[in-house]
Image (cartoon, rainbow, N blue to C red; front, top):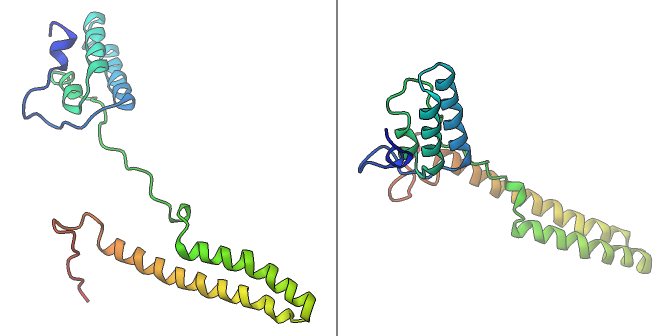
Length: 164
Protein backbone atom coordinates (compact mmCIF):
# COMPACT_ATOMS: atom_id res chain seq x y z
CA UNK A 1 0.00 0.00 0.00
CA UNK A 2 2.05 2.83 -1.30
CA UNK A 3 -0.46 5.54 -2.05
CA UNK A 4 -4.06 6.55 -1.69
CA UNK A 5 -4.54 6.05 -5.42
CA UNK A 6 -3.51 2.39 -5.27
CA UNK A 7 -5.94 1.84 -2.39
CA UNK A 8 -8.83 3.40 -4.28
CA UNK A 9 -8.38 1.38 -7.48
CA UNK A 10 -11.33 -0.87 -8.24
CA UNK A 11 -10.57 -4.36 -9.48
CA UNK A 12 -12.76 -5.55 -12.32
CA UNK A 13 -15.71 -7.64 -11.21
CA UNK A 14 -15.36 -6.77 -7.51
CA UNK A 15 -18.17 -6.51 -4.97
CA UNK A 16 -20.54 -3.70 -5.81
CA UNK A 17 -20.38 -0.57 -7.86
CA UNK A 18 -22.93 1.37 -5.82
CA UNK A 19 -21.83 4.97 -5.32
CA UNK A 20 -20.85 6.17 -1.86
CA UNK A 21 -21.32 9.56 -0.29
CA UNK A 22 -20.40 11.44 2.85
CA UNK A 23 -22.17 9.10 5.33
CA UNK A 24 -20.34 6.05 3.99
CA UNK A 25 -17.00 7.86 3.98
CA UNK A 26 -17.56 9.00 7.58
CA UNK A 27 -18.40 5.41 8.59
CA UNK A 28 -15.15 4.28 6.99
CA UNK A 29 -13.17 7.00 8.79
CA UNK A 30 -14.76 5.95 12.12
CA UNK A 31 -13.81 2.31 11.49
CA UNK A 32 -10.26 3.37 10.62
CA UNK A 33 -10.07 5.37 13.86
CA UNK A 34 -10.95 2.20 15.77
CA UNK A 35 -8.15 0.34 13.99
CA UNK A 36 -5.75 3.19 14.82
CA UNK A 37 -6.80 3.06 18.48
CA UNK A 38 -6.25 -0.74 18.48
CA UNK A 39 -2.76 -0.07 17.03
CA UNK A 40 -3.40 -2.09 13.88
CA UNK A 41 -2.43 0.98 11.89
CA UNK A 42 0.29 3.53 12.42
CA UNK A 43 -0.44 7.22 11.93
CA UNK A 44 0.96 7.37 8.37
CA UNK A 45 -1.03 4.35 7.19
CA UNK A 46 -4.14 5.73 8.89
CA UNK A 47 -3.78 9.01 6.99
CA UNK A 48 -3.13 7.14 3.74
CA UNK A 49 -6.24 5.02 4.15
CA UNK A 50 -8.35 8.05 5.13
CA UNK A 51 -7.20 9.77 1.95
CA UNK A 52 -8.22 6.67 -0.04
CA UNK A 53 -11.65 6.78 1.61
CA UNK A 54 -12.06 10.42 0.65
CA UNK A 55 -11.45 9.68 -3.05
CA UNK A 56 -13.45 6.43 -3.13
CA UNK A 57 -16.51 6.68 -5.35
CA UNK A 58 -17.96 3.18 -5.03
CA UNK A 59 -18.49 0.69 -2.22
CA UNK A 60 -15.90 -1.68 -3.66
CA UNK A 61 -13.28 1.10 -3.62
CA UNK A 62 -14.16 1.88 -0.02
CA UNK A 63 -14.10 -1.76 1.09
CA UNK A 64 -10.73 -2.29 -0.56
CA UNK A 65 -9.24 0.00 2.10
CA UNK A 66 -10.30 -2.60 4.71
CA UNK A 67 -9.27 -5.72 2.76
CA UNK A 68 -6.41 -6.63 5.12
CA UNK A 69 -8.06 -5.46 8.35
CA UNK A 70 -10.30 -7.43 10.71
CA UNK A 71 -13.65 -6.04 11.85
CA UNK A 72 -14.88 -3.35 12.30
CA UNK A 73 -15.53 -2.38 8.71
CA UNK A 74 -17.85 0.45 7.67
CA UNK A 75 -21.55 -0.35 7.53
CA UNK A 76 -22.43 0.07 3.87
CA UNK A 77 -25.86 -1.51 3.89
CA UNK A 78 -28.23 0.57 1.85
CA UNK A 79 -30.42 2.76 3.99
CA UNK A 80 -34.13 2.36 3.36
CA UNK A 81 -35.57 5.43 1.74
CA UNK A 82 -38.26 7.14 3.76
CA UNK A 83 -41.62 5.52 3.28
CA UNK A 84 -43.86 7.32 0.87
CA UNK A 85 -46.55 9.10 2.79
CA UNK A 86 -49.86 8.91 0.95
CA UNK A 87 -51.13 11.99 2.79
CA UNK A 88 -48.63 14.17 0.90
CA UNK A 89 -50.35 13.51 -2.42
CA UNK A 90 -53.66 15.18 -3.06
CA UNK A 91 -55.77 12.91 -5.22
CA UNK A 92 -58.41 13.90 -7.72
CA UNK A 93 -61.05 12.98 -5.18
CA UNK A 94 -59.29 15.19 -2.63
CA UNK A 95 -59.50 18.14 -5.00
CA UNK A 96 -63.14 17.33 -5.70
CA UNK A 97 -63.91 17.33 -1.99
CA UNK A 98 -62.15 20.67 -1.59
CA UNK A 99 -64.12 22.17 -4.45
CA UNK A 100 -67.39 20.72 -3.16
CA UNK A 101 -66.83 22.27 0.25
CA UNK A 102 -65.17 25.46 -0.99
CA UNK A 103 -67.95 26.38 -3.40
CA UNK A 104 -70.84 24.34 -2.02
CA UNK A 105 -70.89 25.73 1.51
CA UNK A 106 -70.96 29.44 0.52
CA UNK A 107 -73.69 28.72 -2.06
CA UNK A 108 -75.65 26.77 0.57
CA UNK A 109 -75.33 29.66 3.06
CA UNK A 110 -76.58 32.13 0.43
CA UNK A 111 -79.49 29.82 -0.37
CA UNK A 112 -80.20 29.49 3.34
CA UNK A 113 -80.37 33.26 3.87
CA UNK A 114 -82.18 34.04 0.63
CA UNK A 115 -84.76 31.27 0.47
CA UNK A 116 -84.63 29.82 3.96
CA UNK A 117 -83.38 26.53 2.52
CA UNK A 118 -80.95 25.66 5.27
CA UNK A 119 -81.16 21.98 4.32
CA UNK A 120 -78.94 22.87 1.34
CA UNK A 121 -75.98 22.97 3.78
CA UNK A 122 -76.24 19.21 3.98
CA UNK A 123 -75.64 18.74 0.24
CA UNK A 124 -71.91 19.71 0.01
CA UNK A 125 -71.23 17.98 3.32
CA UNK A 126 -72.96 14.79 2.18
CA UNK A 127 -71.14 14.90 -1.18
CA UNK A 128 -67.81 15.31 0.66
CA UNK A 129 -68.54 12.40 2.99
CA UNK A 130 -69.45 10.15 0.06
CA UNK A 131 -66.29 11.16 -1.83
CA UNK A 132 -64.14 10.58 1.26
CA UNK A 133 -65.60 7.10 1.63
CA UNK A 134 -64.95 6.33 -2.04
CA UNK A 135 -61.36 7.54 -1.66
CA UNK A 136 -60.96 5.39 1.45
CA UNK A 137 -62.16 2.31 -0.43
CA UNK A 138 -59.86 2.99 -3.37
CA UNK A 139 -56.83 3.67 -1.16
CA UNK A 140 -57.45 0.61 0.99
CA UNK A 141 -57.68 -1.60 -2.09
CA UNK A 142 -54.48 -0.13 -3.50
CA UNK A 143 -52.63 -0.57 -0.19
CA UNK A 144 -53.74 -4.19 0.10
CA UNK A 145 -52.66 -4.86 -3.47
CA UNK A 146 -49.22 -3.35 -2.81
CA UNK A 147 -48.75 -5.35 0.39
CA UNK A 148 -49.51 -8.57 -1.49
CA UNK A 149 -47.66 -7.66 -4.64
CA UNK A 150 -44.86 -5.08 -4.37
CA UNK A 151 -43.98 -3.10 -7.52
CA UNK A 152 -40.80 -5.15 -8.02
CA UNK A 153 -42.64 -8.48 -7.60
CA UNK A 154 -41.68 -10.21 -10.76
CA UNK A 155 -39.67 -9.83 -13.95
CA UNK A 156 -42.80 -9.03 -15.92
CA UNK A 157 -44.24 -6.83 -13.15
CA UNK A 158 -47.13 -9.21 -12.57
CA UNK A 159 -48.17 -10.50 -9.17
CA UNK A 160 -48.08 -14.18 -8.38
CA UNK A 161 -51.54 -15.67 -7.88
CA UNK A 162 -52.83 -15.42 -4.32
CA UNK A 163 -53.50 -18.52 -2.24
CA UNK A 164 -57.04 -18.53 -0.91
